[in-house]
Length: 432
Image (cartoon, rainbow, N blue to C red; front, side, top):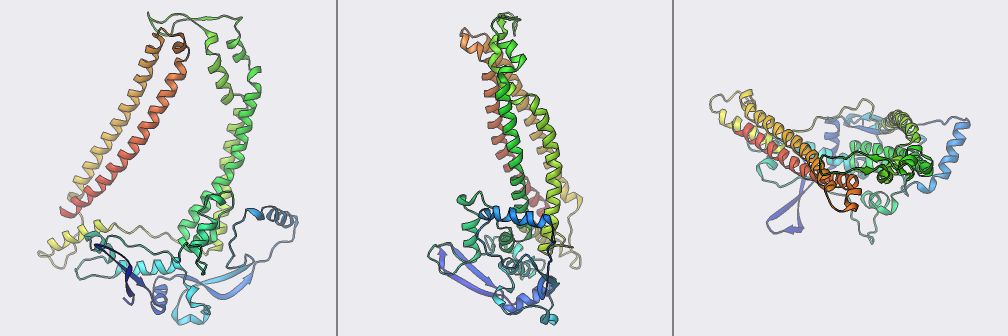
């Protein structure tokens, strides 16, 4: 395997033991070649900037937005592009090994070590490396360590501390994200996710401004809204029919004045413009993200990159291995596979639970509807004029609170059921 093991005695916890795994230089080179990792070469070329009015405008915008950029030093100039090539030990002359400690960054080293541990066999015949050990409980967890600490007195700067100061900090919420450093520390997938999230948040700024303007327009025109004026005008003195049978009496339309004025704030002629704006905003956001994604793919050498399939769960692999070992006595040359008979109980259990959860959801929705109807009728039967005048507001507010509480509770219930079904499915698949 070639990995170096180190027992951590400084952070020992009673009952637990920690083992640090290091990959020496020759192992990193070997695995980088096997994994066909693309590494930057010595060959570089300059990306020429166009000389046009747009360049001057872009330069002016960058100067204005300079205070919003994080205080992170760029490792490579944006005007300099390093050519990348699949790593090969036979072509080491193509790569720059002047700084071997930083040639493979922390993300690359972690992925190499995990790949080695994932495919290294244990003593068992059908074991699957570290995932088998995790599934059988030999190790509680396996994870990459952070590089460097967060202590302020630490003399050596590191990427983790820099990300904590310039990114994962509430004091810099208004600044741009150091996407390059996020990608360098966490990898391309996490980097692309936060790049998308940052662009989405940035694009929401004009949408929120337009929404505020539409709301202010509603506030400014609420006194000129003809339907609200007619409802609120006491001279009209319009008498409305009872809202329920027998116990409800006639009521004045002017009592709905507050509801009519409030609805105009969010439903006025400007909301038509806002809906059209949001439709155009969605299309603009998608095109902007496509452009941003292609640019990051070029800068990060992700062209032709294919996502790796998620590795099966450790517990699942352990159950399959145990089943294979049981059937191994009958036919040692045959590797056992999961059959439809193995999957059927888990599938039926999942279907029944899904139908049950859907039924529970419909029952809760129906219950909220009955609550609104019964509560409205009960409040209209009240002897207090104040209670009767605020029936709509009371019913809508309490129903919304009930919906919120139910959603939060069902979210936890669904999560627990999903975890239970996952464990149950693994047990049945493995022990069948």
